Amino acid sequence: MKRNVGGIDKMARIILGAVLIGLVLAGNIGVWGWIGVVPLATGLLNFCPAYKLLGINTCKLRQ
Image (cartoon, rainbow, N blue to C red; front, side, top):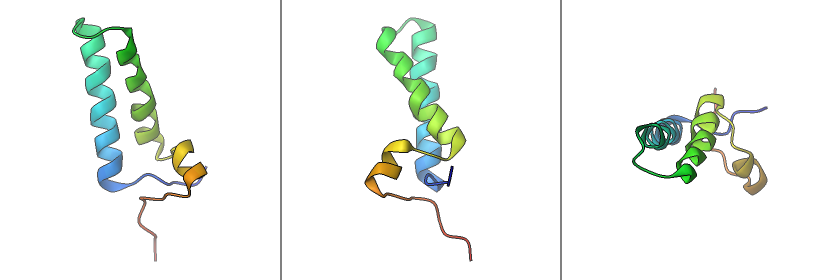
C-alpha cells in the first residue's frame, strides 16, 4: 500500500476516530459511533482506499 494520507489529514482522522469510539464506550452515542474505527484505521495506516479511487494524495512527496 502506497501512503496517501498525511499531515493534518492523518491527525484529524486519528482524533475523530478516537473521539467517536470513546463516546460509544462512554455510552453517549449509539452503535453508529463504531464507524470511528474507519478513520482511526486509515489515519494509523496512512492509507485511504477512497482516496486511492478518487486519485487524492495528501501525503507530501519525498525529495
